[in-house]
Image (tube, rainbow, N blue to C red; front, top):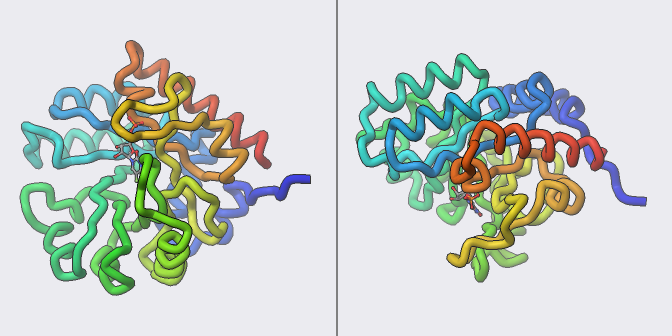
Length: 250
Ligand code: 5FU
């Protein structure tokens, strides 16, 4: 018989970090484990997508540096309003990958001021344990393994990356295509119901597959939703597929 996973309720009870608690609480309340990746390039598209998918997601993942007309007042303020209206968190997929001092500057300064609005951020752990110290007021999702073909995140790299992730108090979870210990949350991108790849190295699995084989906690879906003719309906479909796959994996 297959090993059972912990439920969101059990993970909520054991969670130490306020952002983990918030994510799990939101998942239980909305019956969703879906994070939509908003890889669009204008403020208008970003806000429209957030409004459409908002009811179905627990978090919206951004690459804020691809927004060509970014402006704190016109991009972030309305985005935060939509997030609070539809009760989802903001995940900035910045993938920090430098020394602590530089990451701190990238996190707090520049035009994006990520520290002022993101609930949680992604970071590589290649800079070592102390490079994560600056992310005090947010949750960190550590990049353990990547979804792309030929990634250098080998077994050995992932093992070392996990040691940092599991021991750092700012870390709430990891991005990976492999199972990780249940003390932290698992976020899995590379999820699509229609495609197996994008011709640029991305590799896709279905929600069923990642819940069954990885016991993932949250699926991250980009083009499957925002490129769809009806993003609202697509979000609803991924939400149901993800939730049913979670229930089946219990
Ligand atoms: F860390 C990772 C990873 O290993 N694979 C990813 O695809 C992050 N991602 C992100 O998830 C990537 O930067 C995109 O923003 C998103 C996947 O988008 P897709 O359109 O569903 O392929």
